[in-house]
Length: 378
Picture 1 (cartoon, rainbow, N blue to C red):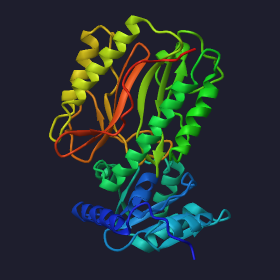
Picture 2: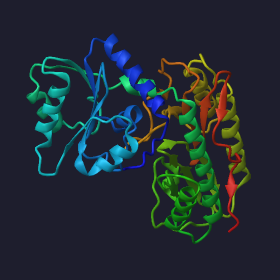
Picture 3: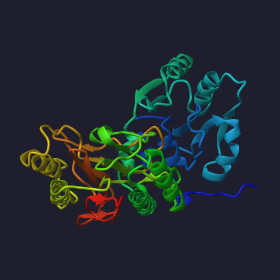
Picture 4: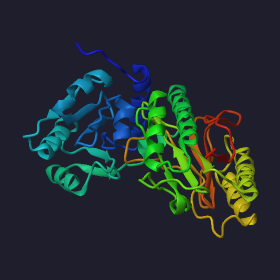
């Protein structure tokens, strides 16, 4: 007998299923083929590190879901999935044919089915094979149906993100404590990862991390480079608890920093404070976005500002690094209570960011690490 280890109360999963099924009926669909790993886990609870293999969930407009996955995942189905129906393939099976037959058996060969066509799991080969086996089925792209629902987090989901924020803070402290002249990025990364894992993170990270020339360019990863006096270290710690994410950035200078460096950090903090202060339910995303852009550009800190300023975070499984909701000058959405965002400002190699949750009256800062330029002692 496998001991169940659900991330949430089974009733929360059933409530999510009911929401999806109500939406399917409104759209005139008989089922949803959920290929995106986050969708599968969010609706059914099923989670395995092997989600990169060919697996999906059939979500009918009536009744309980069916999980389709590799047979070696049966233990994790029993431990995490709140629904019983499953079809499992072995490594010697023609899994694509079996998948199509499973869909037909559960939904029928003349059904109208929504499909998460944008999922990285559903590659072109798999899509063509499934479609060829189901010529009478009407297939509709519904890639955005569940991601839109997931933007509003439950109290339990945000609790996991608060835990991730504490792990992020432990990782940042380890970054500051370990950085110094003669220390390699790899050594720093090892300390950051260890600290975050000990603080509860499911994955080590460390997240964006680079020094020297690469610190001026976003999305660097650690290398064998050894830190030198005066280096900028660009660091963003990105841990997760039950794969619910929180993250933040702080700038670090190695051994020395100028008055101009400290002024730059203070300017970025002031711009960010002004932007975040406007966040509340009903506020257009373009309001704080404009404060970020206008603040940075009017201060002469950058010549252009093209990157987004907010993006939604929650349940994220690699390779995904963020949810689809983003703030930029063309954004047409408004903040709602229960949304959670990573919000950041970048200039001249310095990054300052926070993870925030939108509340009924404003926002809650989930990451609460000191906000300043950090200078290592040596």
